[in-house]
Amino acid sequence: MQITSKLGHNFSITCLSSYSKYSILFIGPEHLLGYDPMTYGTPLPLLQIPQQAIKDVSSKLMEPKATIGQYTQDCKSISSLKSLVSNVDYNLAREATVDVGYICKKCQMVYPAKDACISHQRLMCFPGGKIPDGVNITLKLEQIQYECKLCAEKVSTVQEFKSHCETEAHKTKLAVYQQQRHSGATTPRTVVSSPAVNSGAHQADHEHMQDA
Ligand SMILES: [Zn+2]
Ligand SMILES: [Zn+2]
Image (cartoon, rainbow, N blue to C red; front, side):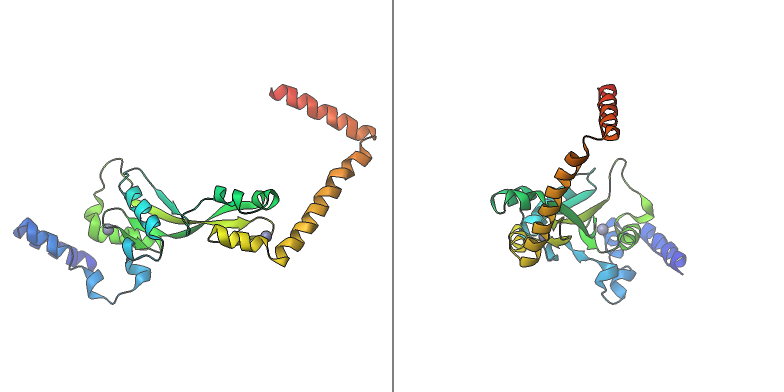
């Protein structure tokens, strides 16, 4: 069914001017079926992400080799946490990435699923799979979140991370964690006098010298 319609298109394209050929590409099955964002995508400017993130991602789309575009909901980075939370809490923070979608670099449509993006490209933007050499035609869009390693909780902004660190749940976990670390650090000292541990330490020194 699809092959027949493709052949039909090819046939009419050869008979028409380039202007008509252009409009034929936009009367594809995508526009005949009902709108379904899961399959048919959202234009990048309409995505519910910060304007600054849209700007950054747009410029990333211009880089032929780029494969990943990342943003944070607050346009800040993990280093912004340094001045907001204690050193201990800062060391518990790490970046976690969330897949947002796949963008066709040619038309800047964002698809939640990679497959949908690829079939769109085959049909619309790169018909016949003609891809310029050395160009990545898809950009994966990722949101970076701030994760508390201790609680395995992810939030979208540095302010939310700060609030998280002020919760009783986090504080309680931190107290237990620090107590465990403290007792964990003193435990080996009580066994250090045993010969087995000493020889183990020598061996470790030896390995270290071999590495160097
Ligand atoms: Zn496209
Ligand atoms: Zn936490």
